[in-house]
Length: 510
Image 1 (cartoon, rainbow, N blue to C red):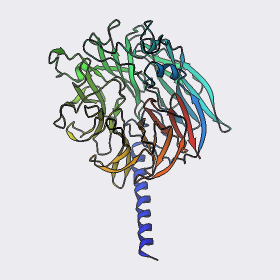
Image 2: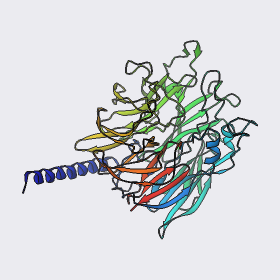
Image 3: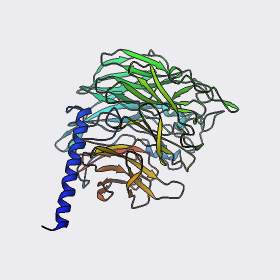
Image 4: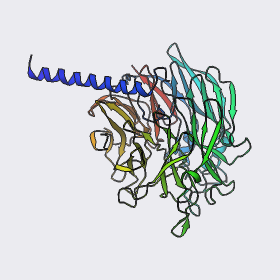
């Protein structure tokens, strides 16, 4: 046998051992009966990883429209789709999807803001539902629909006295699965518990009562392995939500037994400045689309706080499971740069707990909006960064006694190139895959399977499957998506790929 043949066999054996080690590490923290993809970035740590082996992207298996208002929304924003969407939630044969109904009130002409309220100023005329689908004879068929009374935070004016408002970026409505239930955000900071089998209501958790139209569930729900639900709530001024300070902001915990607990962000970030130069900072509150992350042992919750009026007075925050403060680290000036810690409400970056106990979080900067992916240790000490972080929740590939970090890597200011980049655990690049059509990667939370194969969607309308090392395994064109929203991707344990593109969900596989 030739030496080159022996080398190939050795490399293959190492790869198999590495994949086996990664699967073993996954099994230590995630039980065998865990759903296929039950929440944002799959796990309570938001690692975007699965023990599944993904299928090849050769065939479109299904297509469902979840946002029927895309054409109207794009008309209001010069062709851009400025919305955040729930990742498809998958559990065996069943798929749960956010589907918008109601009405979208277009402006006349689109983009004019008139007659007020219209466009983003009137998005509370839409209705958000959680719908269940099941695979039957090769087709994905609707089983039930639950209409929520959840509403997004108001967009507000494009510019206010201090803050920027949401500038037309629609916040995310995001449910989560646990055991036989779907938990759905509701009105006035509430959460509905729904039977996953038939969509019937079990109960409504109401930590803030049921009558406040200015109290918002803000960002995705996170559920840990014990069934505790964590999420953020913001209370805004009813008339001037971005011009006046928030009335309150809380991290909420609902235990598996249904007991609600809350802690204010003022308590979690007690030393935050009140004055930022010549303007007030505003109270500390969560970033609008932040999902809390939970450590593998369930004892620490990580979230992100920012001043209501000033986006660079921000903190990554650790909280004990009893909701007492643990530590807070300011994100400003981490790398000796004045632009290293912006948290914009238009983004959906969320903390990720990595296998060495550290935490990753992507922020925005002045570097053509590329931003930074920052890493902290379990005590909140800043360790290092990579110079991209905008609207990204990176995926984690555990292998060979270590782990790698997978993130989109768009060079906006220079018109490309646009990469999917894998970093080592010190955030040093290992390999890159460049979009072959020089279009942006529009994935905000990629997925990685047990073999380290990466799954991501692009504005060129394709879903891509990328081998370890950065070579292309396969891709499938779905539909043109230039200007489409940043969207997440999910995998079923059977390897089916669930991707979102311009208001439609596509299922792709063999």
